Length: 240
Image (cartoon, rainbow, N blue to C red; front, side):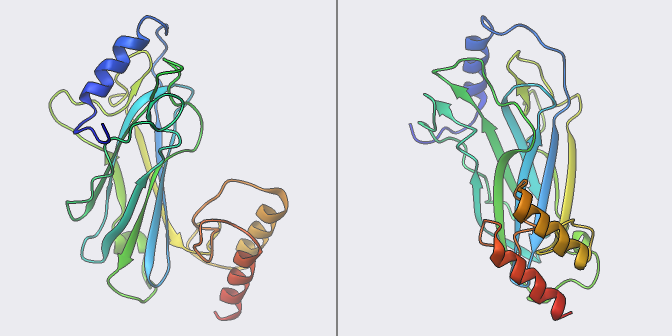
């Protein structure tokens, strides 16, 4: 089966399988972080979750945006981490939902049938990414967060639906889950709203010492950080 119509059956099966293997753990508060970098032509957002030491078997995030300024061109889940199958993404399920303008919904989960009860645990775990085309090609003069109106919340609400569930079967939606959003121009490495020599020094440090990939430091938007980004950022500073 290449695609399931929902994750209810998935969660029920996972809970039945792990309940005999995993002891109850204390409630933790997942933190969902959305990081969006814009250029004159597009906006790319990446969604991450910090599990706060808990192990998740499911999660749900709704990314909201200004549909008059942005249109979705691509949305992908991180299937290297979130999957249902034997030590890898044997079964794709619940592709990101993009049919409703102004919303992208990620429903993710994990059940490794070779390692029942492991779940997903750690910091800065990628949920997925979205690429938007812009309706205009001018860089924002005012707060880009207001222009694009990008935010995030629980993927689905209402009834008995639960988004975030840990391996002990606990409902984490009510902890509650924390959502944060940063929107900045590509090259604004520290995402503080301006591009200056500090960003160049930060990028130099990343190139020398390594560090987490961020869409902000990816100045040319090719999905990796290298010396080309350094030259891209330097050119931006010279042209200011």
